[in-house]
Length: 307
Image 1 (cartoon, helix red, strand yellow):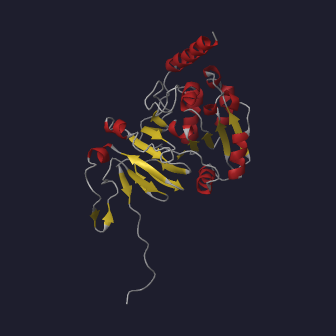
Image 2: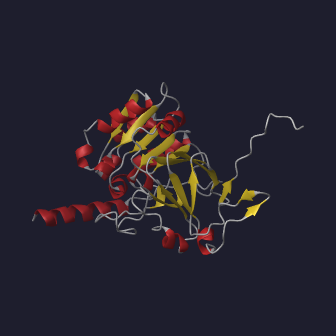
Image 3: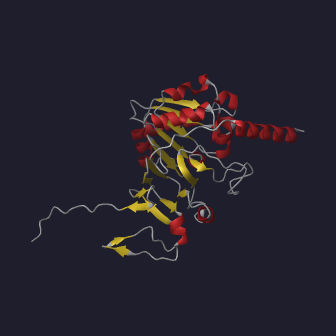
């Protein structure tokens, strides 16, 4: 009896989410990234990775001015009153104004009272868990609109693990039965990174080939795979890697031309001419999402005068 009731409640929630009018995203000049503000997309297990927390603090306006909302919905209902994640953010960033936001009720997510903390927020942080819970609770609600408004004011949307994947437009590993199902019963993300699918825990869990066939069949999408303790910062259509490990780029053009080897031109390596269906970026490297190419770092000029 309890099992049938749980199934009924789940189906009712999914139907309610489907009936919500879609949040309108204004047409702009970017291909993938936000028009304003920044995204911080983290591959999971961020722990005390200083570079990632420092970047989050900077993008949110600095520890004295930042106002952060921590969304714990992905962790399940047990996280509704658990201040653990709030305390982690405070400890790692030094930010004092941090508020917990949690619901699994679409009606509550559509209330002005619930979104009040987001009205003045400079940053939002989605914790890990299961990304479908975030979709079921916030997709196409007033809360979803309020998240977008944080970006429009120049703030930052951040998230780790499930909080990374939910930022894409296509929800990867969104099935309620488990993350091993790549394309499941939830396929719509919150769409902060437009025309994208995002995977996480990439190298730690040997997932680096999972997005290949999907992106091969979806040339309009960019695929991002992030290893643990590693993140990307996205401002407009420029992506930059921070953290300890690697980020993988899945671009349709790279996949269909994967028989090419790395080539050089003017003594510069072309990272996108991969010998495989994806390529890696590490801390400090940047990528142009609009033109689908690595931004080559400028060589530092030597201060030594030529003889």
